[in-house]
Length: 161
Image (tube, rainbow, N blue to C red; front, side):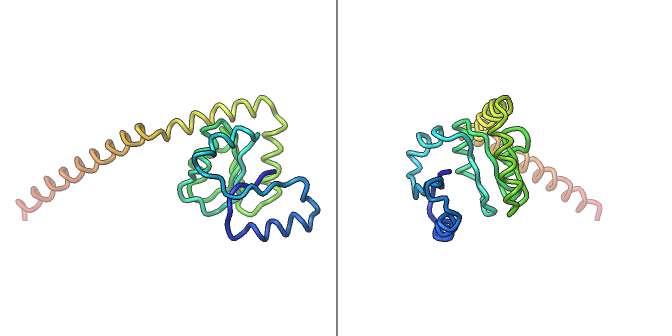
């Protein structure tokens, strides 16, 4: 297991690793520049996050774009990128047993792993910048139409009052 990143939980995690005598099993890689992550993710078999605070899920998006199946928790933006039983699983927050079971399920089933990996790349492609811009333009156009329709309705109502 490699833990990438820094934050307030790192010292607690390191202490727990020592306490559980897992020092030779877990690597703390620290901060890795975003420009290098696309080279790092493919070195691993699975992306795992237990974070309950992912509001955009950019690290998830980056990892699934590299074809990694993923396991996360049902919180904020995570289920938008980790589709349950499609490219990974979303477990209940703070349920370590469920999170571990989901990881084992993916890593011990080659057919599922391949399917999840392929689906991860498809889900990531849906978030490609140009596609997102086109979707946003469509939303704005619909809002403008709705606003104009409301103005017409308000005008008609005023005529009858």
